[in-house]
Length: 105
Image (cartoon, rainbow, N blue to C red):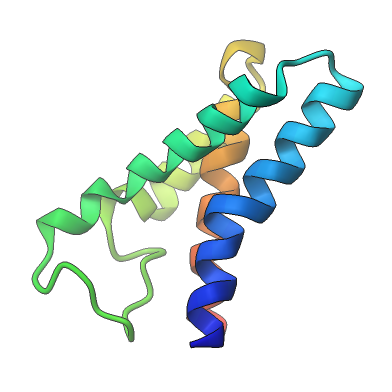
């Protein structure tokens, strides 16, 4: 149960809140806008719908689902270099990090 709260806390509260706070305090961005963008990056989990079973608590998402593949992660890394996509890239990469933590626990 603790694992569940840590995983979804990172996905929906900790990382979005932290990035939105930093962006608003140091980069003159709207906290609300950045927070919403970070939450929208959770839509990357739509690739889970293309597997059977859709949710498997013992499966490592990173490297298994196509939007969690190493190629996709490389694209997310490239998006960091463009100002217009930087917040999205940060959200996607932190999402992958959170999912990767599940792989090593």
